[in-house]
Length: 110
Image 1 (cartoon, rainbow, N blue to C red):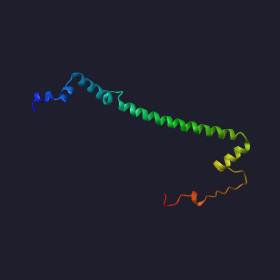
Image 2 (image 1 turned 30 degrees about the horizontal axis):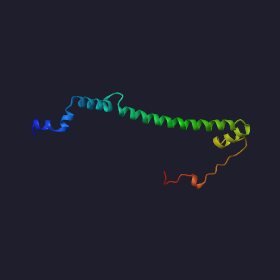
Image 3 (image 1 turned 90 degrees about the vertical axis):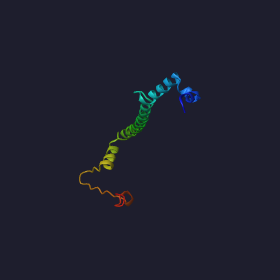
């Protein structure tokens, strides 16, 4: 195929148009090569989604902690919390921790 035959094709006429070439190069530049490219924006949007999910998680955790603090206003509740969480005890008192089989890790799972 020589140049004259190629020049007569409609797709060649469209692609050889200088405006189409400039538009094509501009689109490639903006999508992939620019510092504000589509790829960079996509990564940043994914990061924003992760941060928003973390934010929601921490807001829920803050609400749980506020509720726990409100419950701990009473000295009996503070004692109960210390005993259950940190296994604290009174003087001359012994604590026995009972673990059930389903709460223990089996050697096959390790």
